[in-house]
Amino acid sequence: MERAVVDKATAVREGEALPVDVVDRWLKQHVANLEGKPSVTQYAGGASNWTYCLDYQNTSVILRRAPAGTKAKGAHDMGREFRLQSALKPVYRYVPQMLAYCEDDHVMGTDFYVMEKLTGIIPRKNLPRDLVITEDKTRTLCTNVLDSLISLHEVDYEKASLSHLGKGHGYIERQIAGWSERYSKAKTWNVPSGKSVMKWLEANMPAKESICITHNDFRFDNVVLNPSDYTQIIGVLDWELATLGDPLMDLGNTLAYWVNADDDFLAQSTRRQPTHLAGMMTRDEVVKYYCEKRHLEVDDFTFYEVYGLFRLAGIAQQIYYRYHHGQTNNPAFKNFWVFIHYLMWRCKKAIKKSGK
Image (cartoon, rainbow, N blue to C red; front, side, top):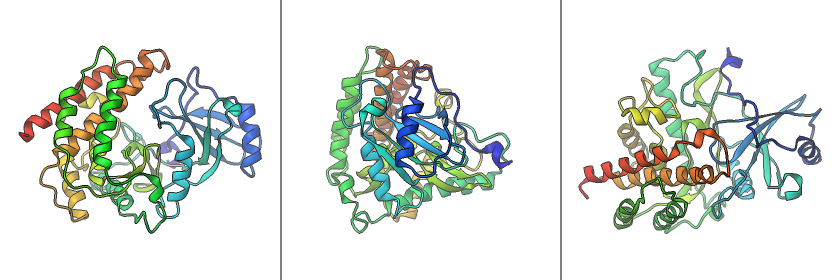
């Protein structure tokens, strides 16, 4: 049963193959006890960095590299991602063990890193069919996932000597300015300008912010579950965007992906995690749970909600820009422009409801 529900990589996408012989030779010089020549598969879930599984005779490792094509400034920095997880591992148990980092472009044309493989369930759009699901267990899964985010936000980054992870204070202002600029630069003719949303965010920034370690891409499909008990979290993946930031903005990012069971058909069509299941909290319940657990008083979550949706639109637009200009041929990105229209509509709907 456990083997049937464990997440597996699939065939490598066309145009994204690794130079296996060269990579294998480098790995055996930097990672101990790798036997034989690896078979290589690729994880299809990621829309940004490319992630591969290299199965050796005696073990398996995960390799992450940046995608081909034009990159946003500061994005897809494999060295930063490797160093961040290495530093965070001692104080946050859900981080995978880092194994090696390569900054020599001669190996495969870009830098990359290798880490341990966490074998478990990735809760993607739907949980595996062979999994015995109950409402009570799903509720426990939901709270455990949120608790793992809360645990991250409560790490004392100064005591753990992690102050170098980001600039810290001034984060809210930098994020609004940065995502506004990135969206505008990546805009294609078939998506909204986003100007009214950008202006609203700039005018409604909270006066206070708190700073903690933020993941900035915290979703169900970035956690790994114990295959023998799907309520238990054994790992958190994809630390590409982690930094020192505001925890409520991190929660807003998480809720941008959160599709309630009663959401409209467009939301359901873009759902990529099992938040629709009986036992899962709604977005409003998540905010209440998070704030109660951390003893926070938040009168109005609208700013963080709109920010999360707008930021997601920016991420999607940067990805769609690559597809639109022929820098990737992944068919999953073809209709992202429709999703961006929808996200902007959600932003305006939330703004109107708030009355601000």
